[in-house]
Image 1 (cartoon, one colour):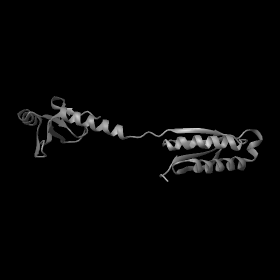
Image 2 (cartoon, rainbow, N blue to C red; image 1 turned 180 degrees about the vertical axis):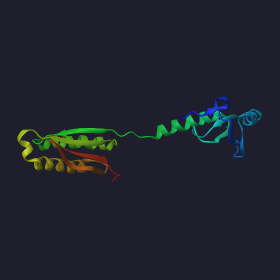
Image 3 (cartoon, rainbow, N blue to C red; image 1 turned 90 degrees about the vertical axis):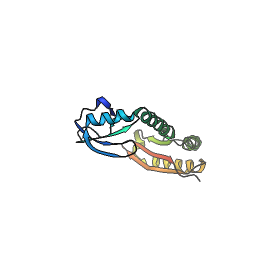
Image 4 (tube, rainbow, N blue to C red; image 1 turned 135 degrees about the horizontal axis):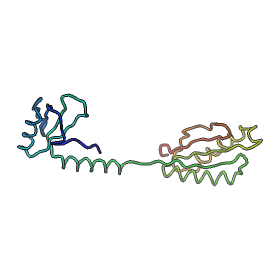
Length: 175
């Protein structure tokens, strides 16, 4: 939450003053503005960033403003969702049973609104035939789509970077 300069913290000589109800007082001296704020029982709050001439200040109840701001921030934080990226490691020599098990595990992750990165690290002679590993990843993606209760979006198609082939799956719209 951004802290505002209030009352005696404001060091500008002249400011543009706005009343609590939006009334424009125009450009006045800081002394007059503090006097108006004191008469109304409100705080003088600087709303513009440093360096703006003349600074814009507003008459408000600063305690109530901070309370409302904290309440709004708390509400925004509550409504925020955090997505994690889970990683599944496949192998170029993986069997169909293991692929099915990993596809079901991936489906559970996706149903919980997490993204999944599935990767295969090619070792030794496997690097000579990366198309085999790409085929395994594509079959794995189909298994995930078939076993998942929600739609699955392939965010990144099977891609090779060095010795690693990977794909990223994310939850799509519900079926």
